[in-house]
Image (cartoon, rainbow, N blue to C red):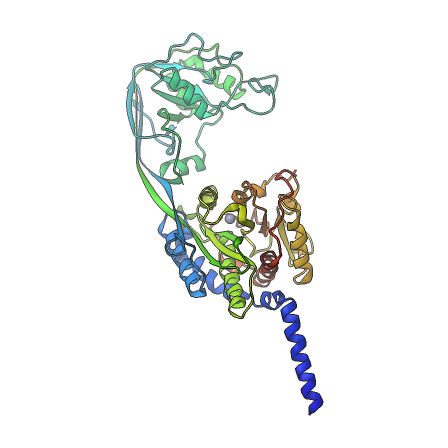
Amino acid sequence: MKHTGILAVFILLIQTLSAQIDPVNRYAQQIWSMNLKKHLTVIASDSFQGRETGTIGQRMAADYLSNEFRKIGLKMPQGLNRYQQMYPLQKDSFIASKLMIGNETLESMEDFLIPLRSNHFFDMQASELVFMGYGIDETLYNDYFEKDVSGKIAVMVTGEPKRNGKYFISGSDKVSDWNLEKKLRRASEAGAIGVLFIERADQKFSERQIRRNKSTSIYQVSVNPPQLPHAMITWKTAIKFLHTDFESIEGFAKEQLFLNEHRPAMIKNVSISFTKENQIIEASNVLGMIEGDSLKDQYVFLTAHYDHLGIQDGKIYNGADDDGSGTVSLLEMARVFMKAKKEGIKFTRSIVFMAVSGEEKGLLGSEYYADHPVFPLENTSVDLNIDMIGRVDTERKKADTLSYIYVVGHNKLSSDLQRINERANNKSTRLTLDYKFDDPNDPNRIYYRSDHYNFAKNGVPVLFFYDGMLQSDYHQPTDDIEKINWPLFERRLRMIFHTAWDMVQMPKMLKRDLTLKD
Ligand SMILES: [Zn+2]
């Protein structure tokens, strides 16, 4: 009896000691796929309508997250309302466009298209059009030479001329900076009242171009002043108001030859108009935190984007993996970190859980955060970003498909990243950490394609965790919850949790000793 008693005390002592030495494993084991599934069943359901930024679906997801943050007991950072950092967005909705050449009315989206974002309301008639070649004004190539476009509508071809297989302006394989914006600026300086751009090689507008311009577009509030009214027209349309012999010019332009010798006469009398609805709307990033102890003014960020692609052509894009998986990962890690805190664990620095929106519109939510940080970026030790960790990359042909994760950014900004992440992984989950996407020759440029980049560009070390989905159901309405691999998802998240824990508890912030360049 006595012996057993001592043994029991001894075992208890060992358990207590080992828990004190490294409690992280014990807590990492409490990341459960059951909880991930419970949240993802809601977040990736049809009722959230694909969570498109600026729509009701996104606001429903934000409400769900802020409710869960409150239930978990996360602290709301100062200055926020319902855990949300609001930010403005521009929302443009196409109403109507009209183009008449002579007596002929052309068909919108078929013969011509008026870019939704870069045009405001306009309604104009012109009795004269001037063909301006490529609309380029350089010393060695000047489409403006001896032409008067003042008070007239300029017609120009998109793209740039080539000579001997190289672009003439840059002298290389790359185009110069004569993009549409620069061409519009030059035309405006010359007094043009509008521009018709001839799409260089295409007879038709692409599906993507049509979708972007005929419905609604949500984007960053623009700081640029309104541009000159402009429309895109197809070659077929262009030929209608250029001299018949101008058809040969189509060949020239396709080959991207010099155009400034050609000055065809054109039909006069063109009328063109455009109307859209233009609103400022709001979206949000959702932030909750667990306050640290001795270094609570330093922060470890855990991020994921909760927005997705909404409804397109009547189909709901549920984005279960992209990035429902990252979103519910934040909730589950927050729950377990909070449990540890309530059970007496002291966290050295503060942990911030941030679910951002606007990612699918161009990393807008995280960009807004980086420009308006709630906590100083210089005190933000690291951002661990999760964007898709719930599936197996269908392109992966190795035998480790049930035990890998892509880790991106391991060799940038801080030499601590790889060391801490690998140590955490070796101690516990033992996944294959694949650094494929850090190869500078990788064409996918993954490092620049999710929200961590807005931290990285401000010098904050980042790691990005990713399952590698680029094909299959990526950005398809079939990215659904049924396709999630729950055991793998859970295992990957335990590894990330472990890494985060170690970064919260280490004595110093991650050192910033490497550059963004490889
Ligand atoms: Zn994503």
